Each structure stands twice: as structure tokens, then as C-alpha cells.
Image 1 (cartoon, rainbow over the protein chains, first blue to last red):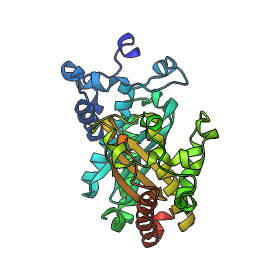
Image 2: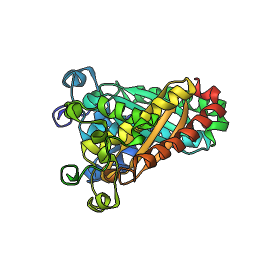
Image 3: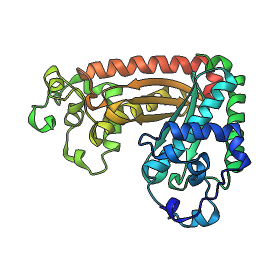
Length: 159
Length: 159
């Protein structure tokens, strides 16, 4: 695993660690860490594998099946989004993630009877972002769309 | 596998084999039969394992992980429902099935941005119906609710 071989790129004093979305990601990643692997890790180290620099991306095969750890990061991302959509809208948001062979799939966030977010997943085994800022920006974009849809169709979201 | 041991309960002249929902189930089951196992089987034989008589149900452990064949039957059922909802409403209906450990999960049918059907799945390893008629009745009930919801919130379903 590149996590062991390549030097950590997220530094402990990275300002992005204070970003609410990044903070929520840390919470979600730690929440799914059933074996307690992250117990002794700093927040920066927990997030580090999500940052795929060009070098790291190149080290991952183009086609592959995502392992459990990578899947848990994808789930953490959509769980974090659901949490934040919930706060924003005051309505329960439920992530539904469906990943098939070779890392193709679909992520939904359902609010009431409304599909607030619907994203096709590709190359899940290469899930990651150029930087924490890029992760936060992507999350913000998705959240913005989702909460707008909820506000537009509040009746269906409240069923 | 009880399929080999217990005698077939669905007979080739079963009138329920003409039911549109049952016919759609046969189409879906055959569509997912990648290895061609069903090629030499009659429709009755293909459907047979979906009928869980009391005796058959008793033969399945209470707790268990569903195998691939059982999962494919669950998928066939929701694919069939999606097809029929599509015909009924004229809008594309997409099944999303999420099954975790020990056969717990969720089945959604999404039409546009509307969750037309949302069902909690339990004991998926024991997926089946008392009879083909019971299967058709259950499907009809779920379809009725789903199409009503689509008609009520057509705007969201058409997004």
C-alpha cells in the first residue's frame, strides 16, 4: 500500500483541517474505524490517503477492485455530506451507496422521498482528491446542489 | 441446497405463470443468468426456489448471509417492479439495491429525483413468497404505492 511507502502529504498544521467539511470527514472516518487503527493517528494522517497527488495516482492501477479501506473512505465522504445536508435542511438525509465490480456504482443521498444527490461512481479504487481544499470544494458543490433541490421540493423531502 | 433436495412445488401448468408480474420475474431471472443454468429449465423450475413453503422456510437457518443466487432473485424482483413502474408511468425507473452483512439492506426504486419505492430488506437469505400468487400480490401492492407516489409528485419524478 502506498500509504506506508510514500511520505505523508497532509501536514498536521494544514489550515484545511479546520474546514467544517474536512472536520466532518475526520469524524466519519474515525466512526468507521472498527479495528481502532486510527486511534493513535493524527487527523492529518487519517485524511492523508484521501489526497491523491499525481505521483500517488500514477501508482494505482487504472482498473481494479476497491478494497475495504478505500470503500470506507467513499462511505465516509457521503456520510459526511449527508450529515451536513441534514444540518443545512433540518431534515434527515440518508446515504445509499451501491458499488459493483471494478469500482463502478452509484451514491445517493435520500431526504424523505427526494433523491437530493445522485452521483455515478467510477474508478472507486482511485477515490481521492488533489488536496483537502479540493475535497472541501467538491463537497461544497455537491451540498449546494442537494440543499437547493431539497428547498425547491421541500414537500417531497418532508414525506 | 434445498433446490436439489425438495420436490418442485411450482407446476408447469400453474395459472400464475401467465400473470404479467410473474412473467416479468421470469424475464428478469433469465436476464441475470450469466452461466446459462436456466437455459434448459422450464419457467416453473426457474421460479420454483422463490416459493418458500413452510417446510422450505424451516430448512433455512434463521441467521445467515445471502448467497449470490439468492441475491440475484432479490434483484430480479426489484428489476421487475422497476420495469412495470416504468410501463405504468412512462418514466424511467431505476432500482438501487444495497445489501450489507447478514442480509439486511434497502431496496429503492428511483424515478427522476423521486424515491418511488423504499423498502427495508431483512433476512434476505430467506427471500421468497408463500406462492406465486403471494409474490404477484406483494408486487402489485408495492407497484400501486409507487405509481401513486409518482403521479402525486410527477414534477420531481420528471427531473
